[in-house]
Length: 90
Image 1 (tube, rainbow, N blue to C red):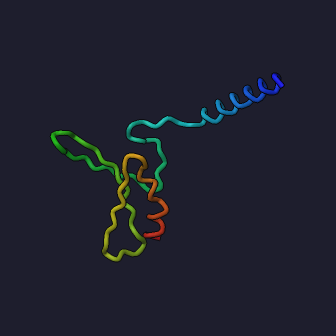
Image 2 (cartoon, helix red, strand yellow):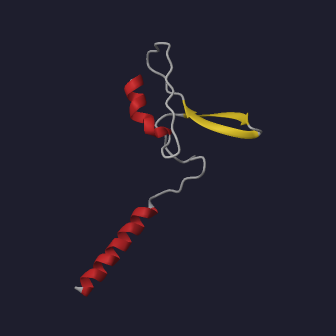
Image 3 (tube, rainbow, N blue to C red):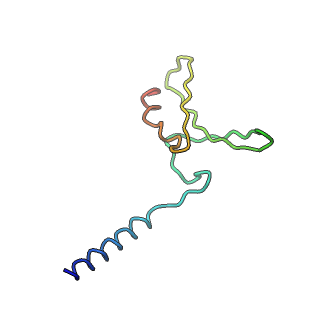
């Protein structure tokens, strides 16, 4: 039984190392993250700070002249809205 436990531990260790070696680290601006739509940037000044905001401008195939803004927050990024954007804009 002891050999089995050692074998399982070794196998899990190798598997987790292989799995995590495939994960690419992300930088503060998520520059190597693959978003579902093209990302644009807006540079602006707020409270005496130079800021840079990223956004995706998803346009419908046929416009009805109305605009919807989908916002994201601390615990999820803009890619969260991919399915909603596809459903809204075709």
